Length: 86
Image (cartoon, rainbow, N blue to C red; front, side):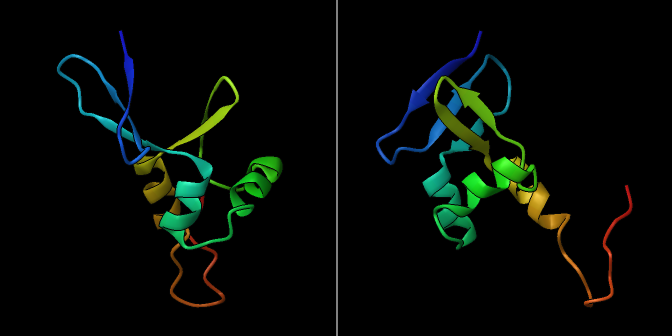
């Protein structure tokens, strides 16, 4: 069973017995973390471009490790670099 805990800094974590904690962010926190506009995550969700997310009721949550992994997959060495092939 998982339990969601809201900490004072508004970051969310889940706790599960003997498992690593996942840190979650809401869209405004993601925008601040990635240094982008606050509306960008909503546009990404609309187009399917951005990192994976979870909906908990009306709340959209992003796992920090998913955001970091998604950003790492976007790294390029030159403008002609198409990145990793799927």
